Length: 482
Image (cartoon, rainbow, N blue to C red; front, side):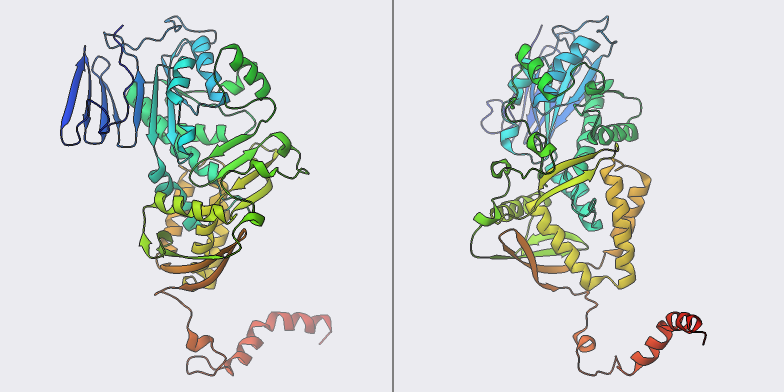
């Protein structure tokens, strides 16, 4: 078998990479070349092409000389549950997805291509994935940086819409799943996979979010959800399974938190949190300091906004991901954005989760505040009403639903004049608005002042009140027999 060695990202440290030239090497019928900050993996025998951007890494590929991908342990006759050719697995390197790799090969006789999306979960969660995937039996690991796309195309539309689920939840995980699933569909097409798989449990929301995206973007793909099929009944069983198969996992029986981290938030579930009466342990938090330990001096900052979308911090324009990352750091050190809630899952049960959303809380506060200047009463009420439905659709995994897209078009239209800036004060877990301004402000000091002016005549209020209160007056007259 002809085998590619591990290929690091295209950089000046790579001996086959030159920033100014295309460097190409040929191995049998396969070619690998780097062009500036892009890596392309051609599998000519298969007619497939996998393109990696400057922030995307192909860390390992094993290719047979004839172009056919071979995996030790797979069979052409199928596995215990049937036969699939190639499966793209949403892979985190955590407990669930680590044990899924060998399970897929055993039960479906398939090659497993692991896919990891970088949505801002932190470099530590990406370290060592190559070794983990290889140890689990995967043939290939594809890592794609989706941070800018995630913030620009998924977070910012929700932010503009004012979407918040059940009064508290800023939809961190809900927004991340469709961007990951969308990328999985793209990778499946590139590598010629006939199926996709995920490690979501049969009790959670994420299984719905992944699979609705698969259905919307490629209804021909087979979907494998091991948690709905295998005999493993819980996380402790999965840990034992992993140990039995020498699969490294990051958790132990003594402390089991189910966490999901991306650039928008960090969620915590499980362990002592399963009892809603328990206070979270202080050492559980990772993005924010305890508000009691936050600085004793407040910090002020200004968020610039254009058409309902944040664009700058203290007058400096930043990319969406960079702006959010900086606000996470600032908000985190002031203990901003901790939420502890019991929510209604899509599948019908209630669950308890603790969320850290420091930068998101700051941005949500700023955008919503600027709307007080730029939206009239009726428009704001309609926006708030539609925001509830928008949040419900996103939470339920219906990102690619025409209804969400239609509501999004409405939100984009009514916020076109929501441009300006909001000044905020951060202090020991709180975010307070201390100033706001907009060139499109509907606030007029000459009208709002207690002093009489030419535009607003206070005497006109008497007639308005008589007409506005007429239904109440008529009802009272009826009750009194007048």
